Image (tube, rainbow, N blue to C red):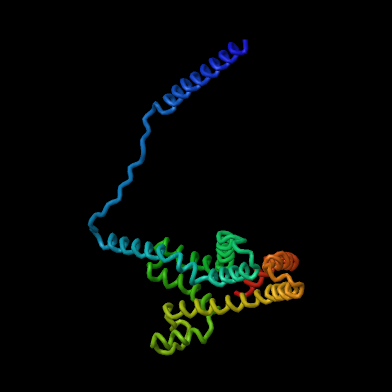
Length: 259
């Protein structure tokens, strides 16, 4: 009896599977019976017939070049450098290995950069990008107008000492005003100024965590527990201290105010 019941169940299962397969075939045929037309995409090069065509081609090449340099512009000409270095110092000071992960730190640094650079982006959009789209200014005028707020931001964060260094190394004349400073001189001066500021902030972050490491290490030595790594004991205390002082709030506030 049991064998006959098992055979009947197997037959039912096979019939159900077969019916589902037949139904799916008919459904597929009904859905895709009508011919599907796909768009045709063509990429080609044709000779320019008018000067406007040549100008448009040059503009496209310039825009593609700017897009290629966009990652470097985002990293080196904004607040991203200082933020990501300070966050990396914080993780090293905590001694928490890969926590938070690199993706989290980079994402946080990017969104803080977007927040800080938003006024600059709005000014570029309103004074450079929108007039260019409306054919009110040329591409060269648009680029010059877009560089003004970026240069103003970099000048505020650049030390005169670093700026004087690169002016001297470039063997150019001493500029009378900020307008006379070439962008090629301003960018490296801004970068090393940001690096110095970031390392200064990182050093200040290290101090309280270093004190905890020293206290734990001396305590373990006085107790004769030389084989126990001090990092394993100090890590929970450092994390607890960071939580009690609301560390992420303090670090974010300090970074934003520093600009």
